[in-house]
Amino acid sequence: MSKKKLLWTVWAVVPALLAIWWFGPGQDLQARTRVASTVEQAMTAADGEDWKLAAELFGQAIGEAPANSPESNRWLRLRASHSEFMSGNTWNGISGMEEVLSEIKDTDPELARDARARIAAAQYFATWKLRLEGAKPEVWKPEAEKARQHFRLLAEDAEARGAKETEDLKKNVESVIWLERLDLAELQSLPLPGGC
Image (tube, rainbow, N blue to C red; front, side, top):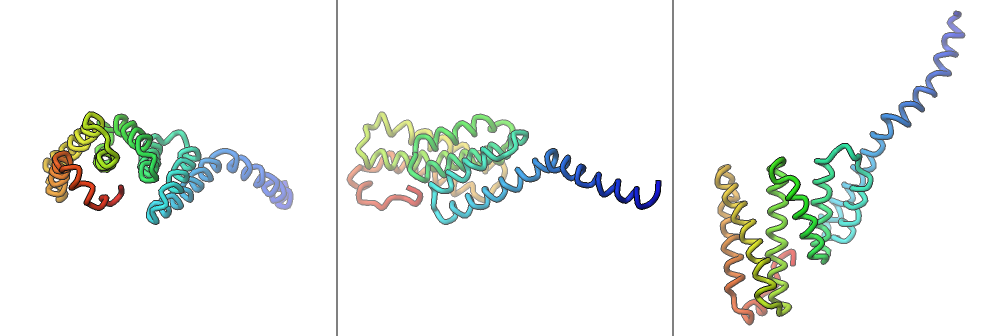
């Protein structure tokens, strides 16, 4: 075979190889690039406290993410649920975060700590709101108890690891107890905590 024929043969095969790659492994690369772009937009929205947009974008990223990466999917679901909570969809957001925590609490300690901290703060804020809305103690006390338990578990874990946030987490436990004991009239005179 002459060099000219060999070059034409190679030249003819290159587009076929590119097409095979593009519709095979290239699809995974494209999907990851789309997800990364969507997550970046979602993080920017969350940083700007545009929680509704952040929840939508994290949800979109979940739909775009490759199915063979459960760790990434859980991270995205946690962020989407947290954004949903922050956008005002309190109970769906908390429920979504609890679902992620139940899946990972024994397999991914770092993400589990993140999920637990977000849930604890969400339940603390939910307790505050429920009390301000005049909910009966049988409605808001279980939420306060859940927040207290999550903060307690976080504090115990931080202490066992020798983490610097141990004292702050212990203060969070005390804050929940303070919130439970605070007279409603006093609570109404206080500004809402950040994130509420």
